[in-house]
Image (cartoon, rainbow, N blue to C red; front, top):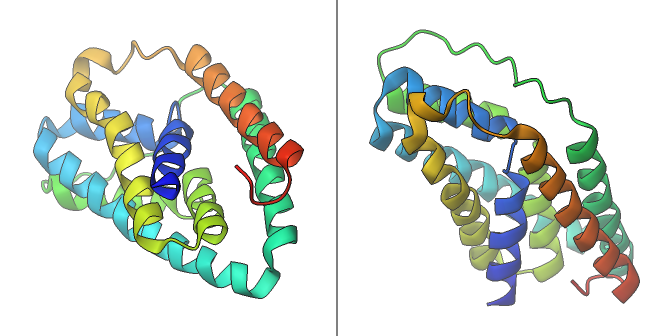
Length: 189
């Protein structure tokens, strides 16, 4: 249960103000088909998280517990710095014209999330917990819950998301998680 809850919270938080969230908003406002965008997003998250979970589980067997624990703590701090120093400019993704909201959403979001901070975080948590299913579900459900309201904001919210406060809150949470991991020692989140 801990693996699921920690993954749900941390990976969900990692999506706040992320390019994926901006893309979801753009896709929803462009197509106006919330269900298709939602399904495309969930399947893209699931596919990327499956790659991350199996990669993280493998990584733990190769690297070992202690070095991996320190790497996870440092990763959290790096994600805090990344969130803190990322510019307020919106991601400049050009969405190709297309009629299939699901397909465009799936492909765009799958490609955008490859090696993204949420995928790296999911990989690290899979390595930490050695719990494939709870991390996979938490890593998919967390961003889905964070992005669900964004889908329904559509055109109304496209220009009104307060990026700076979202970024600062995200940086603070990652900083706290990183400090906890490094203070408590390897693999004790």
